[in-house]
Length: 73
Image (cartoon, rainbow, N blue to C red; front, side, top):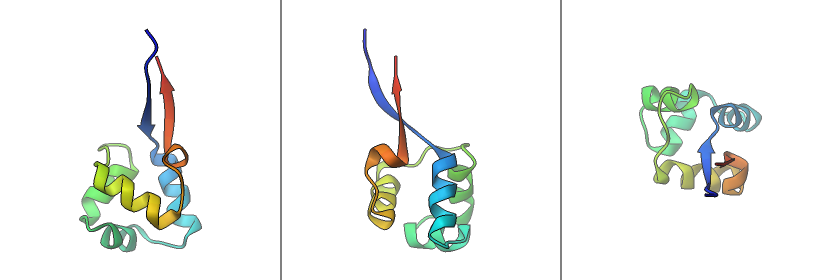
């Protein structure tokens, strides 16, 4: 069976954040989440919900495939 879906990439998120000049606290505020929640997402301890992913796409003007990594099984 072939399954294709996307895995969240915390490494990419940190790269995008720093490239756009945001601190963790600034990006958390823009996304409407707490700093601790943002840190958990960036450190890979928590997956972002759809709302956060959509906000990231719009903010960084990236396709979902650029924010998430393809995973096939």
